[in-house]
Length: 294
Image (cartoon, rainbow, N blue to C red; front, top):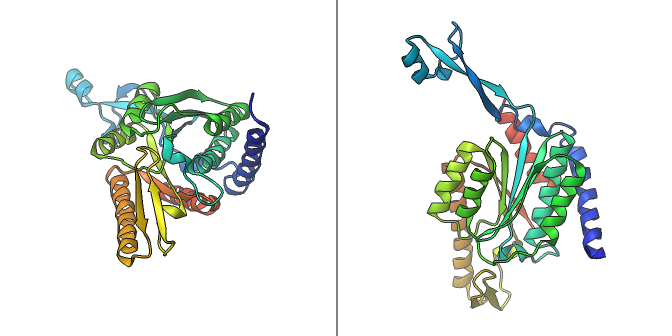
């Protein structure tokens, strides 16, 4: 039985997301991803004017005359929502935690996808695969995904990006649009390599979840910083200017490192913050995507 409070929350997010879908996308959701889903169809003999980059060199060498690979654009997109549900996703300081922020974003993407006749699936992970729902069409399915994101209780507190991406690549055989939603805390070099591999197979977009309290920029006295994933606690005196400067530098260093990782992997990314509207960052992101494809 789903609590009435959760049903109310789902309904509020659905209404809010529907308004955003209608105002931002208006049927143009697919235009930001047009042409990225190409499926191999076969080979044929080279004809003058064909793109030489599509030449199949192995077949050409075997047949002693040029052949090219034929691709067709997939008529339907497959969208995968890959969400970090480790303990840090429960953090939030402005009346909304990162999991709820993820749910709001994912509802917008899912409703946009199904309104365009596309399929959407869900992969929730911690340091293990917590939940996997294969891609499917329809509004009822999209709302089921939203319910799972909000209602699901993960078994583990920690995060493992490598395992999640490995599972995704095995489970989804054809190219898809992958939105990886996380605060990306603790991402390491091994994760980075798998992220790069995943982007070669799927059109991967990183959605970075932030909270204003991730960056403590003013004197609020003694505070306990609690690591939700490890359970470790550290007490800091924010009246000490050196500590505030150190915290700011550490946060900027983390942001710069994430930016470098995504650019190195050739991955588009977007920052969202709890307690703040997601409309502007989503709108700017999709405009950049559409402009880049022209």
